[in-house]
Amino acid sequence: MSRFIEVTATDGTIVKYRYNISIPTNHHATSIDLGIPTILFIHPEYVASEVWQNQFISTLRRFNLVAFDLRAHGETGGKVPASYSRVEAADDTAKFMDALNLPPTHIVGNSLGADIALQLAITHPEKCASTTLISPIPDQEPEDTIAGRKEILDLWLESYDTTNASAMSDAGWGCLQLLYNNADNPLIRSTVTLNAPRAQKIWGKENADILKTVTFSYFTNNRTPRTQAEYSCISGPVLIVHAMGDLGTPMELSEQLRSTLYDARVRVELVTIEDAPRLSPVTHPIPVNTAVERFLISLTGRPSTPKPIVSPWDEKLKEEGWVPPPDLVNSDDSGEEQEFKLYGTDDKDLLQIASNFVN
Image (cartoon, rainbow, N blue to C red; front, side, top):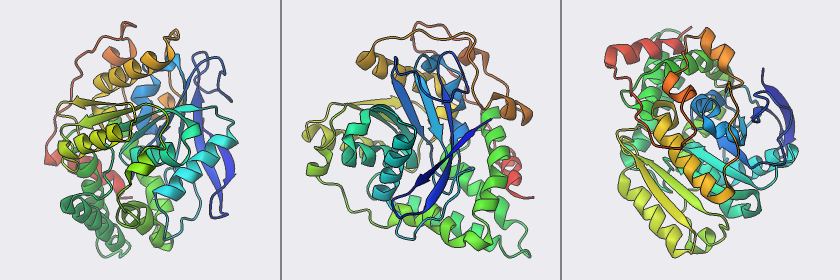
């Protein structure tokens, strides 16, 4: 069962955040263990915090793990102003951390979450012991990616017209293509099944303006390229994890970010995950977890790992068909990199998953 906390956002809105804390001795803790380091996970667009399931059932549980649903995502409510940008999102995240009394924390973000994590490291460096950016969004996305986001938005808005029964499933299809390419596995299916009804609720017809802001305008408005002076504000080390199968973010953009951070005298590393789509923590958890864990252990030391390992979402995900992958849950504590099977699929299977977006 998740927990909730009310936080006054930067624009004065009261936001009721859903969150979960797992510590080595308790997968549903009320607070962190101050004796060990803490990781805060920030999820990607269109989804919610359950996408971090593969991290919460791994040897990363040697740390305090905290995950939350962003504003107007998952089970977190709150109005979002039309001008909402990465700066406001980072400020909101800092306020959430204050509400939970989190110390300087190791931030891990994916896609939208990586964009917020990077901004948090710039404007609130005292909050970030380190920052891991998985498939970070560039300051200005490629035109094809923006066009894809616009198409998803238009289909979602079109679904408000009850005469077009296929628009919602087509929007869901677009989300899956952007986030996962042609990948499919039990965790993708179960998280879609859980999150689709939530998304239809918080982004319903009466909240069309919120839908537009968090799924499109955020990625196109106020995206002036960050300066070297801004990057030089980052005080902790940065790990960039590039998913080689992320069609929306070419490798050269991650390399450019690494070079820019290096020029700003930020300690930065770049690793790649072969064949992985944008949401590689869901499809390729072992290489992603290995990269993150090695990076953090190099900074913090090696706390012991609990046994058995369960997550706060196990029960609900199992109800939706998720099966714990034995090579992930029962992996040893050596930190050695392992293979992870990517479940192949075809367009027919993706359409079946997208159908979860239709009541």
